[in-house]
Image (cartoon, rainbow, N blue to C red; front, side, top):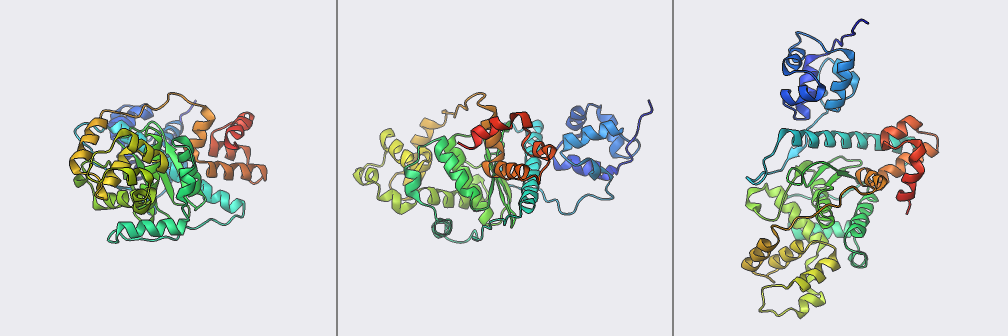
Length: 384
């Protein structure tokens, strides 16, 4: 049988590889050829077969037809990188590829969501809040709380952990934000990311983080969106001097949204705490973290900011918890994982499109990766 070769544009081949941050050796390995073969395709001295091009399109997460374009797309803009890597984590090229592959997937899902809104003739909700990084972080937080109508009493009556995480995800989805969750990406590589758009901006959180950690990332990335700062983050409270000022500001606003100063000061736990005592007990921190549904680290940091704790006591607390790691439950329910990755709002749109006969079975599978024969199992978990 005669092989069919793809007369593609080598410039597009190079561009597509670089957008997923793949070095040639790793790209060649994933495609299933040697490095010299890939280099010959990129310099135009030879061409891949049609079968190989399908593999390239899959590895680079790009449409098959794109490789025939006369020039790379001009609308593509890579996400700004706010990350810093410490000596404790050696950042590898396969890890970066996995992240970039996921980010491209979620950009595609956003495009699918817009198509679904159009098919369903539904109006896309708009997030109209704006802010600048030189504003007072407390005032920005107050504005966000007011505009989004955040009710802290509701979260205080919500169980910490997954219930609180699901509450905040659903809450932000009603405001016109798509929430996706990445898997297989180490926490050191990415804690959160966002894609800023006028319609359906995207927040991406990491399943390897704790539930409280993911809640904080939701609001850290929300502030990025309001600042119109698309980016990738792996910020921690420690070593803040290493980070871009935008990252520090996003953390300050997120902390004030989740744990407003006035509410914290007026809790019974803080009122009962001895004024001269700068150390906080595990019992006190647990009470406050449960009430606000955030981590004890966030609470201690807020107490430090409000002058209710000393720098030394906070550092001592940090030393005591630095070796504690969140142990993510292994496995889990497949359909719950599908819901977490795609978000309930996105899946609802896809199912509405299918049941209103505006989406084919094939297109539904493209959105959900769930076969029709298993759709009822997904719905059992989605609509509970």
